[in-house]
Image (cartoon, rainbow, N blue to C red; front, side, top):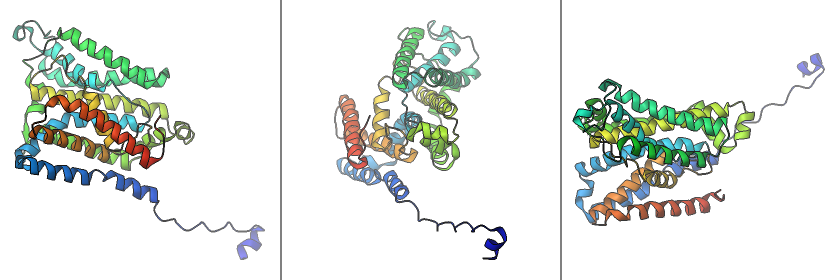
Length: 345
């Protein structure tokens, strides 16, 4: 009362009591774990079909076979959360190591397939640089010129695929230098390095997207870009960076699989985008942007490759893989529509 008399003004009302944690936040965290029961169920079915399924060798095989695609899924998740999509990631997956091999491989060892212009030590930097340039060019067209992201990256997918076919003559680059094969072929503590790198990148993704300002900016842009801009987020710069990071991750994934195969086929990555979208969507990443999590995407790709492995052990022909990927996407979209109550656009 004394403060009121001295100033002649009523004191401001006391702030409302802190509200309990949002129910939406709790539901979001539960959705991250939604696929865990399915993963357990598939593991049980796989063990029933073949006890080999849960053997150490088979588990490592599943994790290694999914590690490169998992990094692609991480890259696509980053872009999808912003409300965009990058179809060109599968071509960057092949072109980046292809360019490096073309510039580094000794033509005398490959019947003139390579140029041998750069020393072996430049191979990995060239791979990552190509990825960054592709992402930067996508950002230029999408962010600066305001072109449709789907059409831009579809065009880039075709261009990059044609470029790899052109420089390779439709053949496979082989005789790769040790700098290109090391990460894909070596093991750390008895586990393939590609598995360690994949898990590390997902761990970083979980921290960055879930607990940093940069991650919150991605979700804000995907939820409502105008509101994000009004809140002071530099939306153009954030989106551009997201596209560059995604392309660099795709290039790294391509390097890993090239190292594992000790070659860069002209068709490397062809059709990989179907698995990428299947894993991301089944993992709860929304095509509308602003929803989904890195952990959910990881469980999506893990479940997908577990199913493929179970089908392989059961003797189902590999030709059914594309059917599976398409069915998974459609089912996941229907489930998302039913549970989310929001129409897909």
